[in-house]
Length: 278
Image 1 (cartoon, one colour):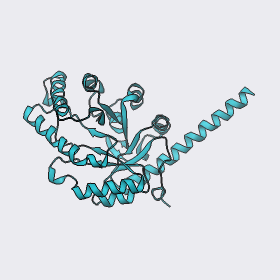
Image 2 (cartoon, one colour):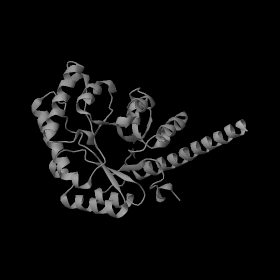
Image 3 (cartoon, one colour):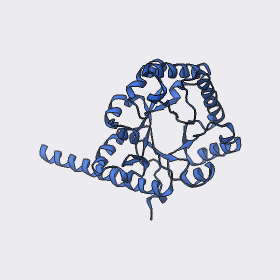
Image 4 (cartoon, rainbow, N blue to C red):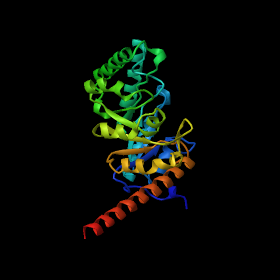
């Protein structure tokens, strides 16, 4: 029997989740099938167009499912707008679009709202110009009474140090995307050690040959133990960020195998150390 058909609720020190697009269907059918199995669902709201947001009826149903199945949510905010756009007009439009999402989806009480702050060298004269634009966008969100600590800004494909002056001012949290970190040549383990108190969610997906959002069994073979040892220290949310039934099932099998293999190693180590003491 595939591991997908087993419940993983309350199995880990963190809340385990996945995305709302595992099956080729809408939000409610996905969440209904996943709710008995996992602790939390990452509601993907990738498009900012208001007509593409979940309807009031969908949000009401999500709220009902949450109560009935002890299920939490987090929301991935739209990726087609940028609060750090070089254009002040587009920054304002982005903030207004994001505020519509906050306002409409507050009823499902997300554990965090994950935000991309995009950076591309060919759009800005300097990192400072990008930081100034991002500062302006974040200031606009504050003016709309957005709770900065409810945000988790995701590491993308630029040095996380670029975000630190902004985090110092606005005190937002971080989303550690392990796949993005590996693809950009950054150590997710150093990231976690440095920012663990600020990380409110971890996105977990496999990487191979420059591609991400793959099943977890696509991690390099020697990475499993390190990733599990990182996860053993997590107490908040881990979202397996894949987008198909096959990818989720393979990921759960990988997590189950490596988690309990590491536990056995730890138990064996404790037994050995106890024998040495005696």
